[in-house]
Structure formats: C-alpha cells, structure tokens
Length: 251
Ligand SMILES: [Fe+2]
Image 1 (cartoon, rainbow, N blue to C red):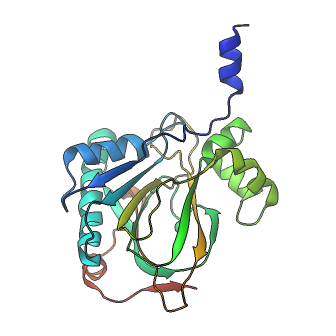
Image 2: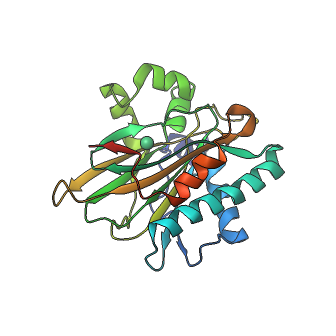
C-alpha cells in the first residue's frame, strides 16, 4: 500500500487551522466576489468545503446597517443558488436576540437544506465561537448527519461531544468589539445530494459578562430553498430591518 495514501486516509478531517475563513468587508453592498467566496465555502455537498464563512467590518457600523448588509448578502446568495440549483432561497426565520449564555454545539431547527446567517453587534461580553464538522464525523461513522444527531446529539450526549472534538475548531481572531457576520451551512443531508446540505454545527462559549445589563446582540436569519419553506412576510423582513426591539432573550 502506498504510504501516502494510507496516511491521508488516516488523517483526521479537521480543517487546516490556517484556513482563511475571514474576509474583511468594506461596503454595505456585498461585492459579487465576496458573495461567490461565501457560496464556495458554504454551499457544500461534501467535506471538501468548510461549510462556513466569517466576515468582519473594517469600520464599526450601526445595527441597521449590519442587518441591511445581511439582507443584501442573502439576496446575492439566493441569486447564485438559483443559478446552480434552479430555486431561490427564502426566509425561514428572522430574529434578534440578546444572547449571553454558553450554547453547546447545535444545529438550528430548520429543513434539511438550510443556511444560517448570524450578525453580531459589537459587545463588551467576551466569547468564543465554535464550528464542528458533524456531517464529516457522521460520515466516518457510516451514519447520516440526521442519524448522528438522533443518536449522539452533542447538546445532550457525551459520546457525541467526545466524537466531535477532532472535528471542532474555535474560530481564531474572534473579536467581540467588531461587527461580524457568520454564514453557516445548517444542513443535515448526507454527502453527494442534489442540494448542498452537508452541514456544520455551531456553538459559543461565553467567557466574561461585565454585568447582566451588558448586551450581546445577535441578528439571525435562516433561509432555505424556496420550496422547503413558507416565505417570511414583507412585514417580518421590514421589522427585522427597522426594529429597535430584541425579539428574544436567551439569558
Ligand atoms: Fe444557533
């Protein structure tokens, strides 16, 4: 047996920690190049793409600008999705949360092909963000991603938590003082499916909360192929773009 083939087969599938998963954003309208970069990373059918992408803003922006950027980016992603898969992407949910609790690795509740975009507002709360390639972990155990979650959901199951350690990375250069957007493949499809639903889990460790009134606001949108969801109303989208309110508290 070729030694290199053997070594490659045995190597863990953890992505290269030098993987440049950050891009700096300079304008509120995502460029075609930036949008394409996100799709190449996020619309994945197998473990050859990372399943997530991180954006940081060169200069601090207002919450309204951050949310408008998210909507603009989602529209660009939808255009490219339609070119490749023949369907637009529609909103499954929109939300705005003050989230100061550590959350274990998880998948947000959504159809089997879904994408999550999280827009973080600058905060004095210190945190770290984690991504786990659970779909690759499942594949190596000859399980589907759904079977892995049903049998070993790391929210509740220590074996699942242990299995995922080699597939989990803490996002480097996570700076809570910046505006950031993370786009995540939130899918639960096996590799090689027509739709790119080979997902990753996400989670966050809260490291320091100055006091209970210090906000850590996350704007959240989930979107799926249009045929998989009802489309959020225009009113819901406008509310997401214009509200000062926080729709949910996870404290
Ligand atoms: Fe989540």
